[in-house]
Image (cartoon, rainbow, N blue to C red; front, side, top):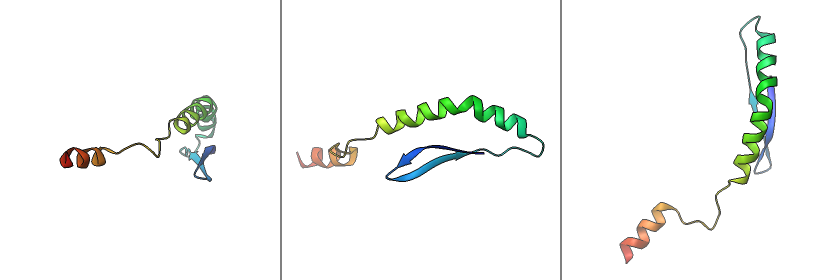
Length: 67
């Protein structure tokens, strides 16, 4: 089962689940149970994108060395 969860930089993202032979019902129940949580986590991760203006730790270290 492949569950679409959103996109990143205009590319689609999905999570795939595979079950053993004969485990179809378990797989479908698991995906059904986890779907809302997956969507919630994907939207949370999208909102928490790092700012492009943020200074990295390496840049901070270089600035401190120069001082």
